Image 1 (cartoon, rainbow, N blue to C red):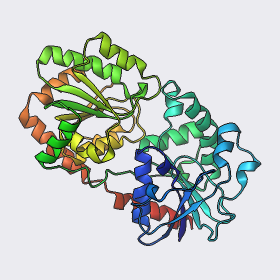
Image 2 (cartoon, rainbow, N blue to C red):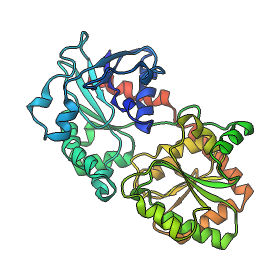
Image 3 (cartoon, rainbow, N blue to C red):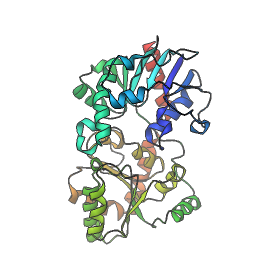
Image 4 (spheres, rainbow, N blue to C red):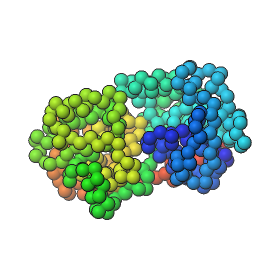
Length: 375
C-alpha cells in the first residue's frame, strides 16, 4: 500500500512526535510504499531532515494548508486534496500530529497524542490553544480512523470530542533502542560535558505548569532538608508556556546550586544523561503518554511518577506511583528509595523488564493493521 505519512514534525526541533514519524517510516517502509509528506511553502525540504529515514519517497505540497489553519476556521479552501498534483496518489494519509488531510481517493488516519489543551488550557500557549481548538475536533470528525497514544487519550477523545469509541484504537509508543544501559566512560564523558553532579534526580520534559514542577520542587526541598542525602535535581527541557514562576521560585528559595536547569540537551547525549541519574521522576498532573518514562526505564533507571492520567498505564507496578499533589508523600518516597541501594537495584531491574514490553516494531505492526483494516 502507498501511505502518505505526515512528516511535518521533522522540520521542527527534535521531539517525541518527530521520533514517532521516523520510527513509523523506518519500520513501515519494509513492506509498504511510504511517502514522507511535507507542507513547506517557500523552501524545499533539505535532505538532512530525513537522511536517517530509509526507503522513503518525499513529497512537498506548497499549498498554504498551514496558513489556512493558522488564520481561518475549517472551510472549503482546506479541502484541496493533498495529493492532487502528486505523481503517485495515496491509498492512505496518516496525519501523525493531530491534523487531517484530504486526498483524492485515499483513506485517512490521524494520531492524537493528548488533549492537554482541553484538560488544562491554562498550561497551553494561546497560539496552540486557538489552533487545536479549531482543527483537532474538525480533524477527528473528518478522518476515517484515530490512533491514540494511551487509554487516557482515547477516553479524552470520546468524552471531549464526542467521537465513537469504535473509531479509535490505542497504540503505545516506545523508546528508541539507544535508550539502554551504557558503559561508565560514555556516561562520564557526557556528565562532564554538561557539568552534571555525581548523584541526581532527573526530570525530562518541557518546563510548563502541567508538569507540576513547582509542586515537585517543594517536595524536593522537604526531602533534602529531612534526609540529608546529596542528590541534586536536574531538569532537562526547554522553557515552555508560563515557566517563569518555576525559575523565580528556585532563586527565591536559594536552591540554584541544587536544582539545575540544563535547557535543551542534544538528542544524542540524552541516553547518557538518563544513565547518570539515580532516579527519574514524572510528577505531571497530565500526560497523554509520557515517553521519557520509557526512555528512563530502557536505561534501567528507577522511575517514580504521578498516579494520574496515562502515567500509571506505563509504570504500573514496575515503579512508584504517588498522588501529584501530596508533596509530603513525594518527599517520603524520595528518601525511602534513594536511601536504599537494595530498593534502587530492585526498581532498576523492574524498569528494564517493563521497557521490554514496548518497541517500535510492535507500534508499527499495530499501525499497519489499522491501515489494512481501513483499506
